[in-house]
Image 1 (cartoon, helix red, strand yellow):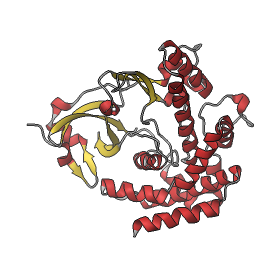
Image 2: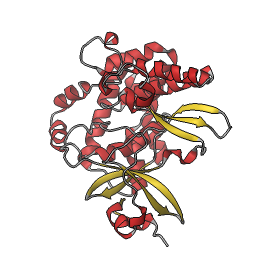
Image 3: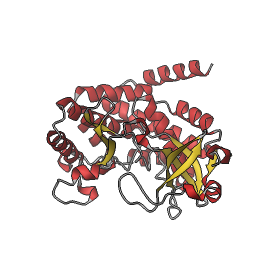
Image 4: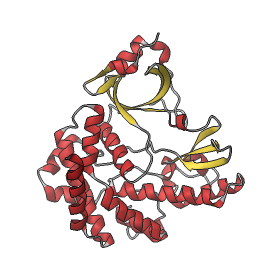
Length: 339
């Protein structure tokens, strides 16, 4: 009988190294949802008296700035919940001697006739370019072509594009610096209502959000110098891949992207205001620490609170929102929840 993977949870994380040693038949390597990727793999595990597949995403040891990636992924998931955006549910693990995130197969909640299409597959119909050269309008065009080819209703296309725009707007609040047109996955095929569908899949490409692109030394240095932090946070680009002709600067400045999306649709401006009001970093920190029963490093918590607040102030100024009123309401509601 296979052991329960929860039996290998220690200090808040699952020791996957020990689990795989004792359950070698569960190891499946390598298979990743959008192609071959030798750094990531699926493994079959036993949990709560049943088997399931989980996806393992190790931190790359060669990177100096990998201290906080695991925590940023967990916080990102909680923050996206606050504004109604689906993310895969992450847990924390140890794999190959370093920290990793693990998540269940995102297809578990869909029908057996549905499958995953990566943005790069949709974009394949375009003239060949490198991954960094595709922009978000290329992805929108590719979604339109796919929906036409599959005879999908117009509202399916509209919802896909609307959901992508919402992700990009929320990403700007969360200091994401690694979102490209190819970073979106879609669930296609025959849904549970026996209808052909295309929907944005739960997010899983969230590397380098919430300042985890900075090394530990850089974060400690910025904590000692707020002016430096403010300057560097303001320069955290957001390359959602918007066309260069839509930018005021050659550099992919986050404000250009924000204006691009809120100008596209009045509903996007409403969503940006909703993000300003609902995104609560303290609530996300509390829920992550409770869920995994461990503490996020103090220096990263202090940094991410200050960095998020800095970006929020800048966005409120850009969109003429009342930052102080928003903060008063937000923290009153948070304190009431804690009582």
